Length: 157
Image 1 (cartoon, rainbow, N blue to C red):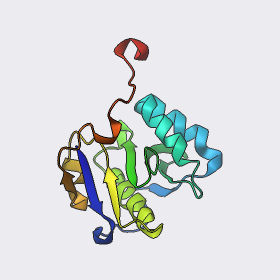
Image 2 (cartoon, rainbow, N blue to C red):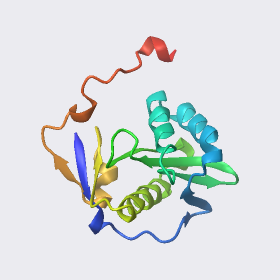
Image 3 (cartoon, rainbow, N blue to C red):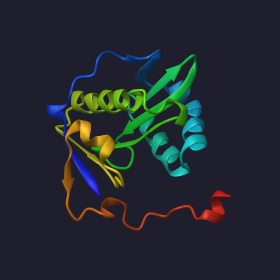
Image 4 (cartoon, one colour):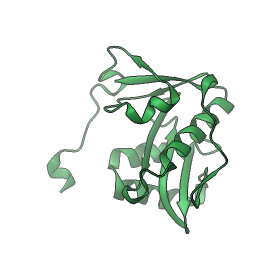
């Protein structure tokens, strides 16, 4: 299902760091590093969406890094204007607040760009997004993604 987030009611997040991790807008020169991270840790479709976010000026992609290594990312305006996502944190970085900081920081940027709402598309587990008090959009599955081509199990092997 899709979720609607009121950007004018976002919770606060303290600074651009969490436990030695820096959260910031990605630089265009880092695009290939970010795309490699996304494809290695998640799925190719997310890497495609992430690539689109780099076409926005400034880039609509935020990264979390620690020790010179990417440990998470979040994008918006990739699938469609006003859509948040994808977002992902490396498995060993989960549960430390990195995803929360990426989520809030990216949504704050959407608000700063003039959006009043963000749509989070095709969410299978809404627990992570509860922190931004989303509204469930009824009868929205598959919604925007209807008919999208997907990798088969054979293509991933």
